[in-house]
Length: 67
Image (cartoon, rainbow, N blue to C red):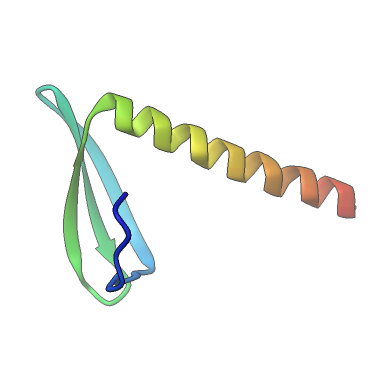
């Protein structure tokens, strides 16, 4: 991703996904009511899924270590 000085962060309220032709569309609503759609390829979503699994696995390992 290109470096950008102006990035807006939103807190997720809800998101839904649907397969459309050769891509996936994710409709997102932020807590402030902002709505937008993300269009992604399967390859992009697989990479994102891998990143999220790594983050969640790390969180689980840290929680287990603290218990």
